[in-house]
Length: 342
Image (cartoon, rainbow, N blue to C red; front, side, top):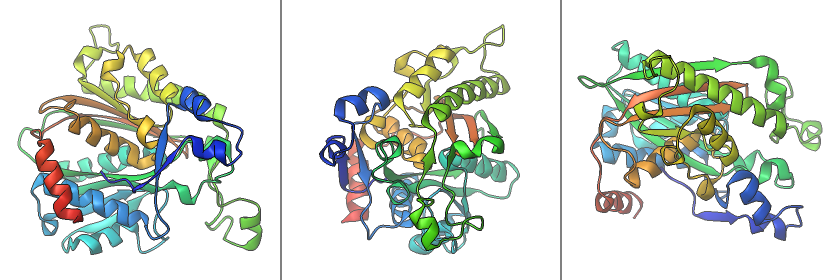
């Protein structure tokens, strides 16, 4: 994972004169701070940094990568794709590259696509990256969105191995509710103009309470669906938290995550959250959370993980995977980071 150096604490918004403070933000979202990219950084820069660390941990050279999938709602530009710019930076000369747009659900969607390519025998080594610079598309004077989002990237190496263990994915969408969470400006419907800029169409527009309710319902449902598909339920077909070692939800809002966990019967020690440090990093949040959990020793070889996300579109999805990597020590991780960023 990689996050920018600049940190924006909750009191930043109070100092700006916004009608909020650290106590309110923490109570209602669980967020204490978020990282903000500099004007010189693009989404591909964050993605490349995360990818370099993932490749080093996997001891895999960039020219061995067969495909790069970048899940993002904040690409560097319409084209070339952010994934192509990552491919250039990494010198991954044999990799195909494309972006995937599913908002906050993007990483689950991208991981499912990569898994399908591997199962079909079309790939052996893939890079799946979630990367966002949401600070560029959020109205920093809008309390409903400015306090929620941060910037960052997370990456995983997906490899074809013998006896990989269970992996199951369920993906859904509902385009009829897209207006509840959208960024309308900049596409063919509302091409960029003085009028679209003046109207604020290039900022995230969200009806928070409606999105909150939908997220809780859809995330709960899709978790049950994927667990049933994976055969990880009790005798009655209900959720059996004992069969999951760690649940890693999209870090949208701590209240959403806890409500979903409670409905599924998951104890809080099996529900991983690092939202207090990063805020909602959209498609990057699950891989960042996986890295944090792994780094903290909460993910071990052969553990079964449940991932779930909900985002604009609406899109939502869940995945069950078995972790297939030995723990990398903190000292090795620090040496990797130092070597890559010295």
